[in-house]
Image (cartoon, rainbow, N blue to C red):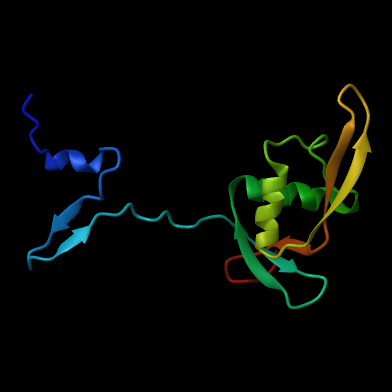
Length: 134
């Protein structure tokens, strides 16, 4: 079997290097996927200590932040607000310096055990892109 080299196949071949494209001056550039512009909803976060700051969240992280805001002091649990990965959403929000307390609670039933209750401790309000609160 005659194995011929196919440079066009490098772009999709497993384990292949990134495709390179020659420029007019003879140098080469490596083709990269363009970064997606970060979009989302801006919020103004006022921590318990320190200055207010602005964050932008989107998708499920935004959904979780909205659920935490709506629940107030009682907080949210994965039982009352079902979602695939509450702990991941809380982790992501904490990475943005949003203060969220985790309270461990026992529960009964056929699958007795414990679950987390997440309570938002920072003040969070929607913000316009100019920085002014709504």
